[in-house]
Amino acid sequence: MSFIKRLALFVFILAVMILLFGLFPVIAQGVLPDYQSDSINSEIPQPDEVIKNLNFIALLP
Image 1: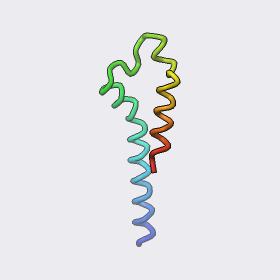
Image 2: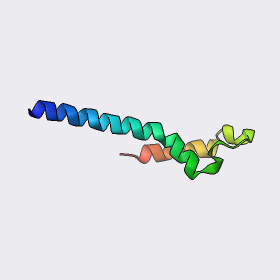
Image 3: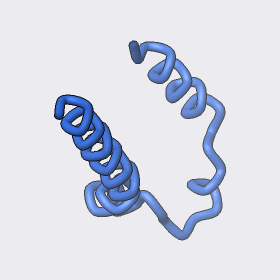
Image 4: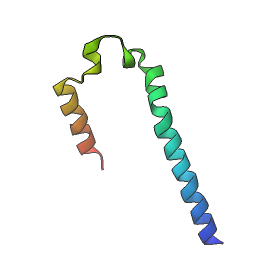
């Protein structure tokens, strides 16, 4: 029975993760209205922005 419970928990966590990552762009678009703006410069990430994002990823455990 514990194997079935573990499998169900794993599937549940996997589904929650997929939902979170699937809804993230929608949430970001709602929170940040200029997330997808019409200007061409916003579509191309600036180098300092990319470096900040990479530093943030490197800080994650």
